[in-house]
Length: 253
Image 1 (cartoon, rainbow, N blue to C red):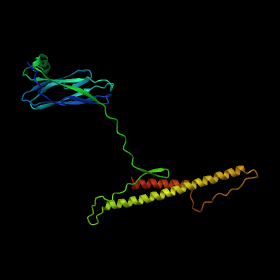
Image 2: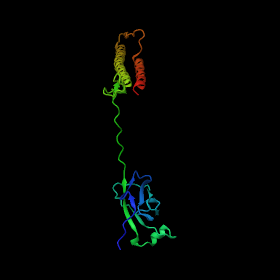
Image 3: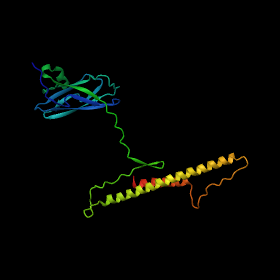
Image 4: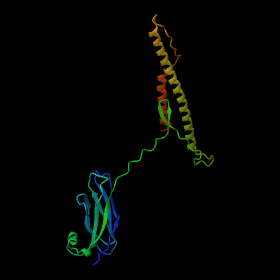
């Protein structure tokens, strides 16, 4: 007598996929659907019973109903070069009214009464995470990197029918223009302060060399006198850097 064709609809029908990493339990779901007008018994078997937990591994499915089976792969040392031979088999048969349990029915069933479907296991290793998205373009101001301010597109949609210009975009564009101008001024000021600071250090160094090299006596070297109200270059540099940070936090971030 020929073998009966499987009446249950399996989802997935061919492969059970388990996703790594496999240093923890990996789960896969199998849905069994009974499209017939009769109650159907099912039993799930595997070629590697010590590696999997199946819940439920047997039961009955009422007509026009479905049952979800959860398959749990236990943690193990995954070797990508090792060929995976794990398989599952779903056996089914029509339920016969009586006092017998499903297990007893399958034990006593004749081979021609059983229907089965085989599924292979597939182990999937997640791809390496994509590289971080490229950072926003930066602009170097002195020794500080600041985000480049994006320009507002001139073709941005208008929300003001009278003027044809979005007031919010117009205001934002003005703020960005002012920010760009401030950054330009700060860059120029920082460059000037660095030059002044370098010049002062150079003058002091030359004065010290002259004093050590003059055997006849100390030579008094008159350093550049700072005009009234002049602050040291490093102090101004610190103030400019603090102002730049505050300005970027307010308008850019």
